[in-house]
Image 1 (cartoon, helix red, strand yellow):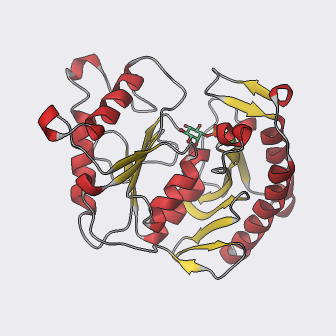
Image 2 (image 1 turned 90 degrees about the vertical axis):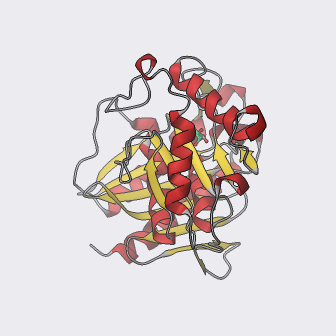
Length: 301
Ligand code: IPD
Ligand code: CA
């Protein structure tokens, strides 16, 4: 498999659909509610996915394809080369014109993130990676910079953490979310693990790319999907970051469809300690343990 050619092809497609996204004018008539008003889809999401699917499978007909908008519940990622695509990551931002929107095209081979392309057409920012060949970013078509841009030592108290509300707003997973949010926001005097800053920017893929670059220290979300993370995962790991289970299971190598993710930036020191301290924060929200169980195939039950 020519991974460099794949990366070139995936990048060309991401840039082409970037034009479609930029020229779209989403409105109430072209936007539908999926689960609730925090979980929406526009006609552009669907059109862009159809376009990407047609072009990728036209060029690579033997590959599998998983896309957010055509996903059938129960389908699983196999060992075959599989494109995992989010046509628009940051749909809520897209309908608001908030410029944290991207197209995310990942290729996994043997279930391992192998090529990743994330492109934000609003800022003309591109992030790419090929397994074993490093990760890069460029802006406005300018010079490619190798990631990370910075990799100083890491610690929880000075961290800028990307965290998201998700679209489930009740139940134990949401309670755990609230616990992690408030614990990271509170001072130690009030029982928390006060960090420098928390950011909800509405695109998991862009946030993970920022973590890969070292512009944010970590990203934590339980409930997101393989298409939100697959492309950026390759970029993160190639930059020297790690993607571990978002729950404190001790799993440093979760599967792409784990649904619970903690991405931590490249660092000269402190990466492992950071993961363990973050897991402690999550674990402290799981008391009493009998109230909440970790399920093997998904989010917190
Ligand atoms: C969403 C974004 C958001 C994350 C959600 C995702 P979408 O993707 O990545 O940051 O919190 O879990 O579903 O719906 O904009 O493609
Ligand atoms: Ca999407």
